[in-house]
Length: 439
Image (tube, rainbow, N blue to C red; front, side, top):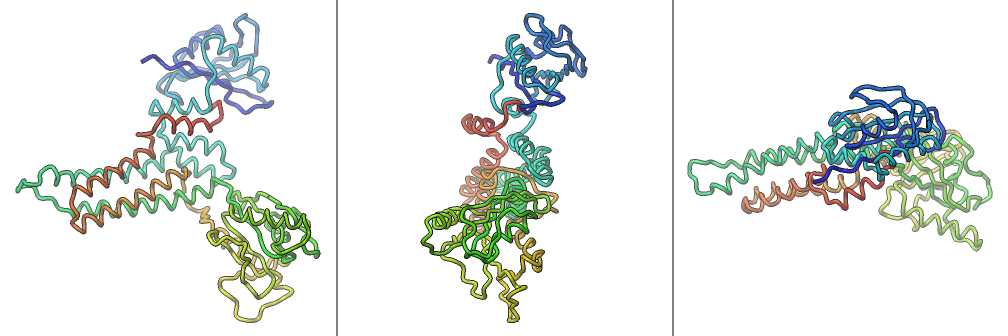
């Protein structure tokens, strides 16, 4: 098998800055560094050098660093050229590296090589992209836990317990007639039940990490003139939306990102839901109906004691019903525990709203075990849990150890797919194509 190509790319964002970086990885990295700098660089050294093109024209002056395989990010020889952060300079230097034997790296190819060279498993590799894309401190910490291998360690822990259980099951299948070999199913059941408990905990932390890492959409809905725009303004802390006593002021959706205790969320104010002959307002109501279907959470606002939500609200989306304007229309009667009573104007009840939003979105910014994973990981873990529970049921029902062994084989296959031990090239290509070129 031939050695992989030497690849090169700009590793810093486009634009002007104090420093720009060209990364080169592969068997010809050191040779390229010598041709660019005119010097031989040793592992662990950094040299301040001239950077020259193939015609010996000076491109820039900067640092050249060499990371010798396998002690590098990709597991290959890696050279980095640190120059001034000019797009022009960086492109000149990149083209010089390509002239001397490198080729342009594909998106995510450096991290893909790190995965293929066993520097990272697939979960850790994807966490690199999540860390780059993180938009809050909690999201960054969650992604970093995955990058450091916390999620992978948890999966390996469950994997080991299932392997132990499977080995006991197979022992019973391999030696069914050996009188001196006693197969006790209680240890098998104990291992599997413990694995199921751990899987459910992993899913919980993974779902929390998913909320931290993505921008959940909160849609504010309700009839006209109940205080939806005022609620948006209080949540954002700005006069984001126009507030008026005239019903139907908001005719289009208004989006604003906020940080709720360090977690980024998207708030969407919508047109009031009602029947109208106004063509523009009717279009706003139609857009409201569409966007409600994509919400992670709906804040349904009313200022009446009739808390029956509009038929336009989807039944499958979590909804917090809010009775606004209690400063104007105080409710002395027994309050419905399923309705949040507040005043957007005075702020009364606002802290309770924040707490309900966090609970509804499973936001726990104190979760030190939250990890960033993909939805397919969560789906696989949920499937795994069901398989393990079914295996326990089959064992307790004496349905035969053959069925238990097959279920555990499928379970282990699911875990291997999460970590990338058995993954098709098409899936890998899709995963790494979403990375930036220099990573």
